[in-house]
Length: 286
Image 1 (cartoon, rainbow, N blue to C red):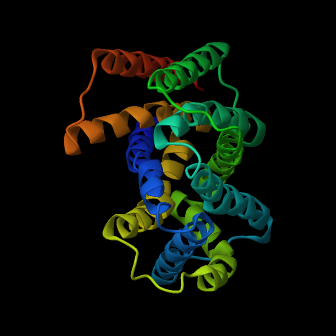
Image 2 (cartoon, rainbow, N blue to C red; image 1 turned 60 degrees about the vertical axis):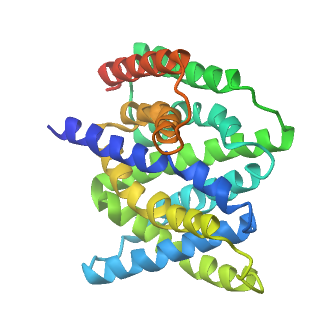
């Protein structure tokens, strides 16, 4: 029952994260990437602080502070900053090539930090799924940028570590508590930096950029992690982490529904193959 609940929770988290890169891409068109990173973390941190006070949560033990720092540096600062910088150089479609590697990175850190030992068949499904997503993204016709690619690769590494470390802590602290404490831990720095880097005027900022900032602050930085860390903790870091393979296809479905973009047969075939890889990884993940 816990494993099924973990997969459902992880699935919801991936759905929420699916809008992160497009929203970031829209936001960095008018916001400075560094300001966007610290502002989204500061906004989410203030909300997290309010939740912790409202529910009178006990402060984490001293032994957990190092792990929370890793989570803060990985998913609160590292991944958002590196992707924001990269998305000024590459398209959101190109970034999906690297998002296809995120489940594999999460699984590796799940073994190194979470003590998990998936069966050999799991790695086959995980690698195949990553190659399918990366290959599909490359088929869409993307333009390479060495610096942008390097930033995205670094983002995947720090994010995989942050996911695994947060999931390990969630087993004892709880999913929403982990991301909340990580945000609060980073809050003094992100709040001060937000005030220092704030634009002189916001009059030129258009509604899409504000909506992008709002989405990555509320959903990508807080609500999504509540579901995601709970899913990883209950269902297994390596196994549930493979749900991220579906993230690009959720983005395509969103584009088809809201923007009326065409859904091609090869897109459906690739999505079906990836789903089979996720099913296989689920079977052999623990």
